[in-house]
Length: 246
Length: 281
Ligand code: SF4
Image (cartoon, rainbow over all chains, first blue to last red; front, side, top):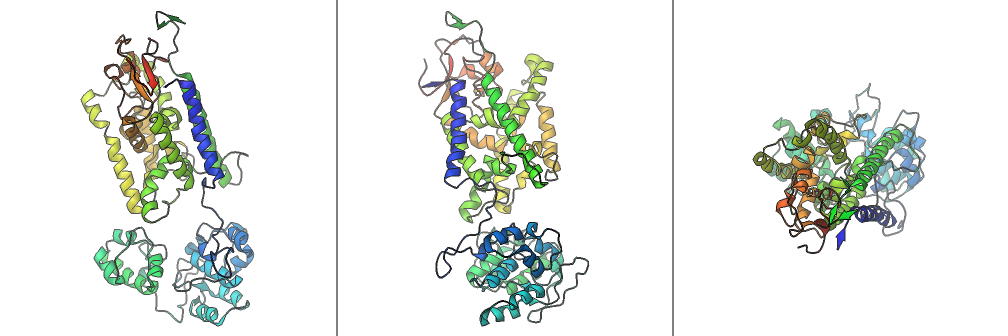
């Protein structure tokens, strides 16, 4: 079979745009992260949106679409000063709470949403809320377990105001290492690769964790949750090694 | 019109390819502009607002490692890049790197600059680099490919975007563009005045991937020795400097399936250089 340019051009268009149309029909054609949270697959809440799937790129508006919580309530919970709370992305919390002793970020939004709507969430990792968020939740109906978790994971006086970066330490936790606010800080989104790049050898990482290191692109926090390790403890130990390696 | 198998009025080039190239250049340019407009609250109705990363099949290639090992995409890469990568492979398996020759807007822009170069240098254009050096440099794009795959796999971020001239071409007005990409784009455009498609020949990592399909693609460029007049027109005009007149089947990893060497374009003898699945004599 011999082809000339015109049939080739036609076939090119058919395969290219046909392929795109087919993948759209199959739901594969995503040009941005979907802002539709995955749902619980089993149990009492099966089919409902799962706050564990809230990602950093979700705006408060996206959270409202998925969970029905008004962006104003979210802004109030996290002390966000903005004219348009619906456009505020969860990951921006990390920036405005950069000086906070314990990370307030996307995980905090997951925690707030789950408790606000009475939805189940894996509490084996540490997620923190500022006092303002905890106060709003205390006005809702919480189980004794949720209340206890909240008490232990509230950062009193945490401030979202960059001009007033002083944060009072949480009563239940040790002071954060000094390097927390520097660039080379082990945080919730830090991967093993970053720690390796900062000069901490794999053997040392494995010694700290007591288990073999997974794929270096895995987030340390996720791995700790998976392995049942306490992220806060590991974080402090790794941070000490990072500081030493400087 | 044909006399004794010779065309008297043959087209000098594959005009439909130029139209297709223009189409994709405008489409990508409009989508890139639309992406910027949408971010600032505007936008062109009915047109995709996707980022260029979402529409780049090479994004799919560089994210394969992370997808297989961690189950996630490299930052900024989405499912659409994976879909385009598969479509690109299907096309290349059938027709070779048609994406390079017909679709890629960076290839198109290099061809536009080449027109100027051809005006200046006439027949010397695209024949400046000594053949021996050129033959070695042609493999440099595989080094670029290895580097890009390695740094993406180990960092989990799209480091190549900092150097990518294609991204720079359609984002030079945004703050997202990196100086490295602009410098490489500038160098590519200047070099295009002397060499046809310098980025494609010496550096493009996606071209390197697709180029491999030239070894086994279904439709191949074939030359019928029985009717060939050996005038060398096909080799002289091939943008990738492939010596079409000295082979029966083009299997060069650099062919971009532009069809410019065929009897439909520069070859003056009908049915002598053809794009076919079958055998020619
Ligand atoms: S061999 Fe023919 S089809 Fe391939 S690049 Fe050269 S001119 Fe184009």
